[in-house]
Image: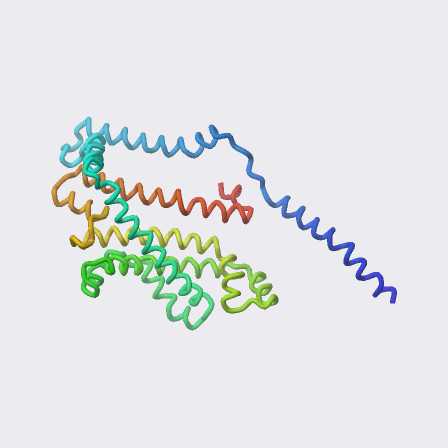
Length: 300
């Protein structure tokens, strides 16, 4: 009797203490990021890449001035800048960039919608994993440009062909990234989810996807890279007035006209878009995921 009278009291008295101890341990494990001034942030994050760009431009201009090769093969940075000004004056610079960016982003979103359930299915169903897993890994290593001739024959030279090449390049990477992330989910999370009644879609939503988020995010980044590369390969090979002029087609047109300044401008614009998407889309998401898991300071 005495035990039944005192046990609830003990539990009630100990519960706040346990919670406070747990909160204290979490606080000790979390490394607080020291505050930085704007000048420090600018010096640490913006200055190094800026110096790297200036170094490349200096080496480029030096090679041009020393006439290591003919100006036909290696135009100066000023010549490439003039090519960009020509596009700006013609009002086609942003149109060319947006044509490719829209195709790349919309194709990537479709690849996420298709690749995510495929990754969940492969990770959770052993027969599917045994049958489809090696195929996904093989498709991931296949160069995207190899799909272009087949996609042209199947679908013709149109936007559907472009999206087919993007999906064939990006879906395996996204699915494999999610499979790798789910494989790294601690078994304790899975047992806790089953104990709380999570199964099927609720298990995927509340346990698997949150637990696999770092690996899934890595797969999304790789999937975007494959989307962008696949699109450039398709635009380089396929040409039609109905497709408009994206960055890949602009690059190929400049090659056909032997305009090396335009070729270099096309390469720089393709690189610029890839870096911009990484910095504006994936880097903030990655920082937020790492910060929520107390890993941001360790990742620096």
